Image 1 (cartoon, rainbow, N blue to C red):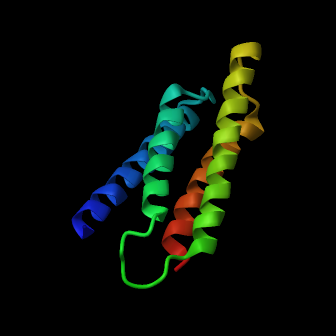
Image 2: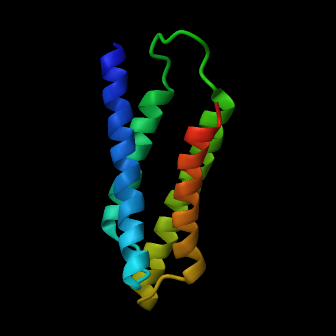
Length: 117
């Protein structure tokens, strides 16, 4: 069971890497767009994160406040990706604040995972 949990952690990390990597490519490329790859990475990270939040028979209690905060941040990222995508379709550009918040919140979510024990 522990090996399966580690595989889900790996998938969760891959989802984060896809989301943050796609954002970084756009940020450093100077385009400031929301891409489909960002949404796919967020979805992978979300599904794997929800699977990790389930009790796996691990020793010790799960940190439910941490899980709740990470879920709220994830929902904010999803909302910003949706808003940015709609604005991009309608106006041809993503508002700068929306674009930068996606990257900042993604990095914040990773920071919460690593720092909050």
